[in-house]
Length: 100
Image (cartoon, rainbow, N blue to C red; front, side, top):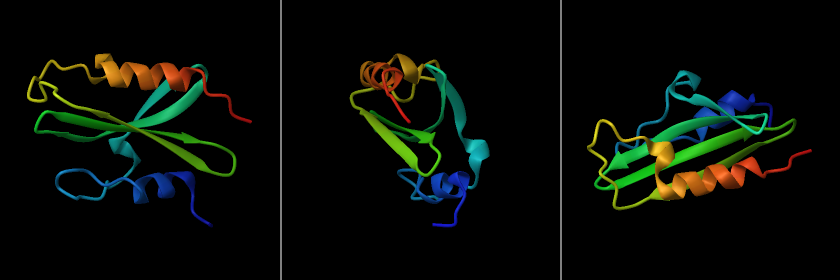
């Protein structure tokens, strides 16, 4: 209570496997989905796994949606995370999200 949405997002985002706290909102990428702006960050890209979080700021709260992708060629510099199957499924789900 009493925190801005940005403060809540930063406070609740810890990178893996380093355990490092995110330093600020500049680490996030805004993603527009069906007229809603989500803040996206890759939390982990290590040992065949990619973990991302999508945050949605609403009037009185912040929603967080996580997606975990396994068996990924995580060292591939050309990897487009949004095209991975579980990420695509989450993005599809987020496109149907109805908020007040």
